[in-house]
Image (cartoon, rainbow, N blue to C red; front, side, top):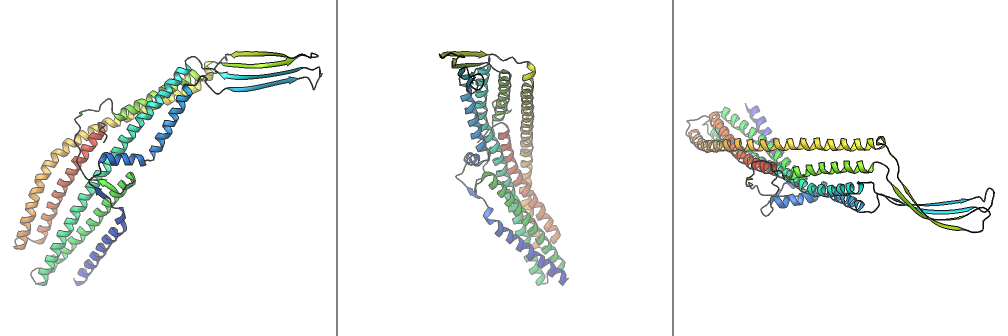
Length: 414
């Protein structure tokens, strides 16, 4: 028996030392609650630091480039050509010919209008992408914040359980020293304390992981306080939802790109304008003239078919991706609405159970001190009561988290 007691005590010391080492190693990862920091402000700061922020700037520059292209008078860059001909190396009769020309690519029929529409669609997509990215970032911040809240409750309840187990262990050990209880109760109390201490280590590690993930997401060392959001009054997903607007802008952009390719995939007309100077064989006089050439290339549908088919394929893919996103959004909304109803009902029952559990702990402690309850029954009552309190607290967090998910689903962006 003495050997068993020694092993249990040594194991307890190791566990407590590990828990202390965990705290020391990860103290720098803990987040500081800031009562003045709002969820909206944190989302703004997180968005500014997000990797996708640079993408938005590039997308805006891309749209501006197409705006400039659509407003140009020419469909492509002009080209300068120079031509020279002589018979100096043959008959050497004095033949010379100089010709220069500027080739001006012209817009095809409907191409300039299609290019303007494409540039406008890029502008709209860029504007909606900013709102969509903020909505997406808000969802990640909301999720991470309430994960920390749940982890804190788990850690707090595990700490309370460990403290209760420690007090019982001390009480039982004193009673054993006075000869009022058996060694078996001491071993049970110490074993219960070991289990509670081990559970606390796991819950502290889970809390640190949740805070670490949140810090990586936000690139910040502070977080807002856990404050429940007001439930949105919307009962369905609105047509102007930021995600839907962004997805539709992508479809519009792909459709405009397809139309532009249809108009520009065939070779276009060009205008060649330039001076010419020539001198005939055995002729001392030079003749200057100005030439103008207008060309209309012939192209069959076979030449443009691959590019048009590729554009149609891209459009079909974006439409399919939009529909997949819309289905996921509908599922997200219905899951949040259903979960909110269930959690609200569960919370009422759990709150009542927690109140009863608190009374059970008080009655169990009095009965144990009076010798009317053995240690195993006391531990069972305490563990059941603590589990009831934990469930009620976690359901409160779950309700707040579900409200945030519901607001997220209907497009309510902080």
